[in-house]
Image (cartoon, rainbow, N blue to C red; front, top):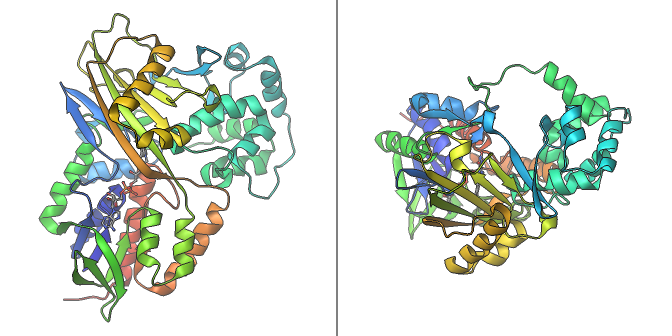
Length: 458
Ligand SMILES: Cc1cc2nc3c(=O)[nH]c(=O)nc-3n(C[C@H](O)[C@H](O)[C@H](O)COP(=O)(O)OP(=O)(O)OC[C@H]3O[C@@H](n4cnc5c(N)ncnc54)[C@H](O)[C@@H]3O)c2cc1C
């Protein structure tokens, strides 16, 4: 039997891979709910995503899984024709200029006319095109990398708010080599990041998304993916709700303790946050546990605010609030604009994101206090002063891995140290990608390795 610990999307994907091969497995999840940070709720036909709301359409793994589960008819793409995102700057919303690839400009006119950036930054962006100097070989933070290419204002009003929505972390400590490795490659090849992005776009093959949209998801929310996985898995394996408290070596491979009882496994896939893996592995390799513990996690709060019949229909996908502007909210998404099928006519859903230091301070406070802080920002940022008809708050403590400086070296050492433990494999968002497609890939890969090394038993 292969034991998979952690019933988030990484562990579920590992189990799904084993289920397809017919190999016996047991999946353990400590919460009474499957899916980890994926959680969809419903209110008056509105789809409210508590955790992730979509996945990047450029990566194939989520599409493959959805196809394998027969959910293709449920796939929807983001309404990219409405893709205007605003950035809050000096008391006003300003649209992100068209043609940006993250913070790299690829079109002159929209950037030249943008009220978001000063002329000094625009001139600097223009001159960057002629840079021929390859970047230093050493690892840098995202902030240092962007500053070198486009200056501080681009860090504050593009890189920081764009990446905060993904990592909820600090661009001064995130490693550009781990978070944006493609940009580092382009810099090494072309010197100018803008030139690199322009060249790479010319040679890019078409992505797996039939609609070429930036994001994809399921009509009824990503909870549909979890439900489909769960209902297929109960039919072919064992799903156990309970916390794995300890791991011990045994003649067969591994022995797991669950509420005092021990059970045997040939192999183990650890699909839990790195700090949880550290707890289980500390008795076997203290250095490995310390490396796993040094992968930092940020916390966040998401909130769905549902309004019926707003007098003015909100426009665009939503807004980003740079840390420099000192608000609680870091981002807001108008769900009914970003995706079809998420809200009935006449309803507007604002999905709010509070991350980083702001969320750490609020996390332990009451729902009322969190709502009050968010609504005061919503009034300032959107002009909506009325209370929502419904709200739902979700707290995500230590849930987003931070790929800080040294991340790649840390992961290399973790991979080296895990090998001698034998038939134990890691999956999850802590190592080689934080998005849902990355987690599906790591889950599947861990299951493949476990299969390859598991003894054949009749
Ligand atoms: C608020 C938020 C928004 C996000 N938005 C997006 C998005 O829009 N698009 C995107 O692609 N990604 C997004 N992400 C990232 C992505 O959702 C996550 O990286 C991914 O879902 C993590 O999956 P996982 O299975 O690795 O971990 P988790 O979902 O954390 O699952 C790990 C599971 O292990 C269980 N566990 C831990 N210890 C034990 C134990 N000892 N025994 C048994 N079980 C245990 C936990 O209870 C948990 O259920 C978002 C993340 C968050 C938090």
